[in-house]
Every structure is written in structure tokens, then in C-alpha cells.
Image 1 (cartoon, helix red, strand yellow):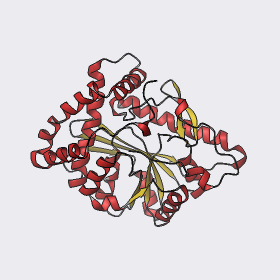
Image 2 (cartoon, rainbow, N blue to C red):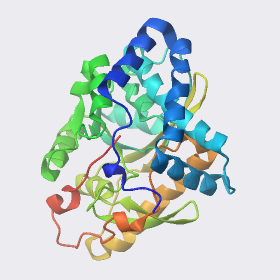
Image 3 (cartoon, rainbow, N blue to C red):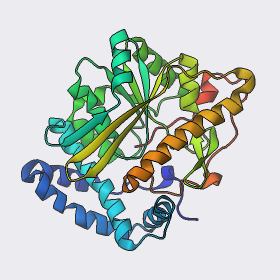
Image 4 (tube, one colour):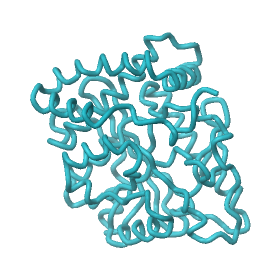
Length: 324
């Protein structure tokens, strides 16, 4: 087995290490702080075998060839660089970054109507860059569904940098009905609610979709929430392009997800496959931006059975955990 499930992997760093990086970032500037990434990358390449093997397995798929150790190091360095950049994004916004934004039209339409929507992201690139949309557009309410219990040291550090964004987090550690109620309340107020939808947690209902040449489990709960609340869905990708450069890409996915009860498994499968194809497209365009450092294709770690037609909202989302 390449690695255990992502929920079972220990956090890669202590509270002291994260606060040391924050101190260096605030006192020494971004150029100096980026020098700290090299020992971090060396630690993961040398010590963290499961992540190293998962990186190599993923890169072999996305690059269509066997990657070298330097490419694995580049993959991990890209991840570390985006983590560091979160500090600057949350402290001072996007001013120091060269950001290219495309596809805002569907979001502008919803804002103009005063209606809420769902923004589906992934562990491809920097989701933090998308959260900073709230800074650039103060007229837009942005709520993020996030599991505060996953990577707690990093979460606490980022919360301290911007308490206002922290207050707008919907904790995915709640029970399913509470999560759905919070999402409904936020969207009824015209907010954009952002979720990470590429990881299936242990025991969570999922369905298989073709992704980078093999079947992988994807969670079904986000799509059931969208259908139950009759909300439009926009996909979002914050792709790191090196240096200070980011591409923020938004894509309209659906004006409203409809899932007929009598044909639920087939319709869910079709929706998830459409999503997997868009995720694959952007993964190939930014191959080192993939931050799922576990065996994404290991089906034994996911419950593949779909919820039955009579399941209520609790069944749909009770296991939903959006780790980041």
C-alpha cells in the first residue's frame, strides 16, 4: 500500500515549527522566508516516506512517465510554497502577488441577484487564494466549510492571522444536519459557500470516477447538498504558477443541480465524472499543484455504496469532513 488514508496521516509539523515560520515570514520578508522551505522539503523527501511515495505515484500518472526524485522534491516544494503564501495572503491580501483571475462572470451574476451559491474547490492549488476573494470583494460574503480538527496547528496559525475570515468558517466537524443548516442559512443571506469536494473521508458515501487513467473515489455529499438546497455550483481553482504568480480560475458548473430520486446513482455518477474531468484538466495544466499526499486511487479506503433513495439529509452528510 502506498500510504494510509489521508485522515490517518499525522500533521507535518509542530506548533513551534508553524509559529517559527510565521515569525520569519513577518520579520524577514517573503524572499527570506522562502529559504526555510528547503529544509522542510528535505524533511518530507527523506523522512516522510508515505508522502514521498504518494507524490511519485501521482506524478507518474499526471506526467505519463516515471518521475525523478527532484521532481518529487519540486512537488513538495510547491505545496510548502503555497502554505507559506497563505501567511501573506491573510495578513495583507493579494497585493504582493501577480494574480490572473478568469471566469468571475457566474459569480458576478449571482451577486447581482443577491442569491447564494456553492463554490466547489479541491486540493489542487491554493484554496486560501480563493478565500481572499472576500478581501478583494467586501460586498461578497464568503463562508468556507473547513474541518478545524484536521491539521489543527496550521489552522490555529491561520485563524490568528485573520480572525474575521476565521469567524466565517463553517466547521465541518459538526454533525451533518448542522452543516447543511449552516450552509442553507448562509446562502439564504446571499453568501458564497466554499467546500473542498475531492476527498472522500472514511465511511463517507462516495462514487467512483475515472481520473488520470484509473478509478478513484469521490464524495457524493456535496452534490446531494447542492441538489437538496437547489443551489448553483461554480468550480474554483487557485493554481500556483511559481514565484508570486497565481491563476484564479472560476468555471460555471451548473445553474442548479437536479438529481431525480428514481435515477439517483446514475445521475450522481455523471455529475462526479464531469467534475473529475475538469479536475484532471487543471491537474495536467499545473501538475505540481496536487496536494493530496496519499494514495488517492486506493478504493479500499472509501465506502463506495451510494445512499439509498429514502436517505434523509443526515445520511447524506453525516460523514462529510472537508479536510485542508
